Length: 218
Ligand code: DX5
Ligand code: ZN
Image (cartoon, rainbow, N blue to C red):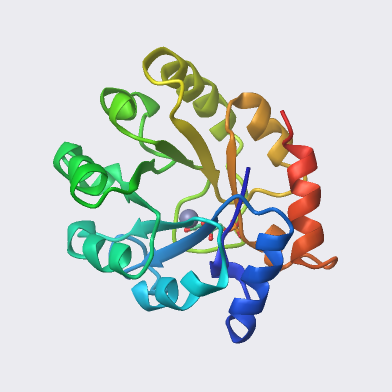
């Protein structure tokens, strides 16, 4: 499943581009929210979710790369988010937030962790989440290179997910393109965020989504 990241899109044509990747079969739209604190970049807020909601039937998954995600959950859901992904790095105990997103807000919840966080740290929560996001770059910017050590981490994560909650999706994010998606899929990922390789593709985003879908077909 391909999740185009709009961070790499031409924002002067955002609605049109999201329609295009939806039509091409994008499984969901990945919305990268950055606060300039948790990551050294500032990107977008709930207003972008609100703007895109009427444009696509694909689920909108919000990747909160922010220090205090609790402040923003209700706003993103009100504006149309279907799934919220928060970072384990900023949550000593993610359980209350997982509960809130699932029960109070009724939305899918994902836990993300950076390349320097041991995979084992997510094990206690796998049973409670819908998606584990194994970052394959250090978050903050699109267009970075896939970190090759991610493949060993993905294999570990796949084993843990199979043991604790096989329904939990394994998503990768960062540097996913025609050269890296196959290995990530073989290592155990089943959802692939792609920003530059979709919205920067010379053949255009629709063709890029279709070719990435072929490369990660089970
Ligand atoms: C990075 C973001 C990623 C990024 C992916 O901080 O979380 O979603 O936009 O972009 P590419 O696919 O260009 O690495
Ligand atoms: Zn992301």
